[in-house]
Image (cartoon, rainbow over all chains, first blue to last red):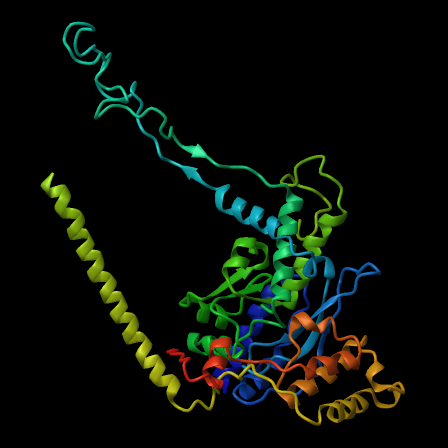
Length: 297
Length: 150
């Protein structure tokens, strides 16, 4: 009893520490204990979790919707209904933009370190091997020319080559929007109120994913920190990955079959991705400090 | 020269052996998991089948649910009942999902604007089997045989 109370207190203090950094309201501590006791059975019937868009939706468009579930029980999928902004989750499916952004992600970090020696760099070969005329052999000027075995390479890779290039920020943002829309329209996007698990058993998490027909690979997205149970459960698993919302990218979205977002992550993504639709062009790069950027600092 | 020819073969042998060991380990790891899963799971029932056949009393069932959820504010034609309010929509769709065992997927939720759309959705059956499974189960002419091993 005392141990359970102490564990709940520790969990609560950690939750408060996290809530002090983020703008979301802190989770009430007293609710943790009764939920832990009821986790193997059906969860108690609560009022539905309804979420409307924080950013207003312009008039001809109407929001798209998704069920809000929770990870506490495999059948707990219909907890509420969330509105999703159509300019983020219902964009035209531009596959060319997905290709552009995914290729950029793969290549912009690439530095190829291949380097071969040219005829000037290969050791030796300064002297003419035999005289120009009269020996009966073909005329050559150096033993290390590209024609010779052991000679230099004529047009080979030269030195560390960088394949760095940048795709415009708005195209990258649109790529994320297209990827999210495609996930929603292919029934591979799920919204969850929080990533709290009843236990930190990886097999339980796999069973949950299997029972809900989630697919081979699952990407779980939350805003800041993850609860301990889910980070412990997903640590050993290869098919389930945890990502903070800042790290969401087109390659991960395409690589994993299912995407699971928390409500905080949905709000974060909507705010960040929609800001680019109505911002001014930067007079100074965004990497330098600005006063009015969305999000922290 | 001879060393260069032999060492890649030796390396391949080493890697081949380690790959076989990995496969054996994976097989060992997979078998006890399968045995555990085959035991009757009270905590983890097998995932629900995705096939859905609309029941015969669908329309009356739906009408009763709509009247229950909307209460006195149901319009004359119950199929025109709007689902703009998220609370009512969630209540209605959650009840139908638990009763019929078939949920409206996320991609279709925004299309459910009135009760008639919901009726149209629940009228469409959903098949679980692939075309080859259907062909094997169907009656075939005597000179056509399908051997399909899964």
